[in-house]
Image (cartoon, rainbow, N blue to C red; front, top):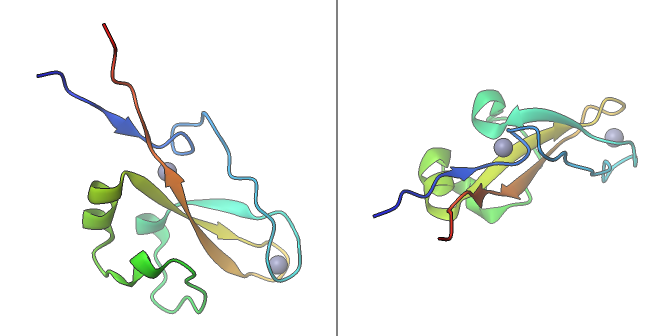
Length: 91
Ligand SMILES: [Zn+2]
Ligand SMILES: [Zn+2]
């Protein structure tokens, strides 16, 4: 059995999230993985899956990495799910 390693290209620096604030249109700043910066009072949660309080199990199941983006202008937080990639080698 070969092992498949999943990784988030954003967490690993291969990619960046290029999104604008839905409120004021300013470029959002990546705040890192959601788990590290999870804000229970965040008013804006567009992703239904985030209703799950246990984000880790969701992450495990979906191979998606939730990132919280912060608008430096109006302080709005938005969450984006980044598709994780795998480095499975085909031989
Ligand atoms: Zn990530
Ligand atoms: Zn904004």
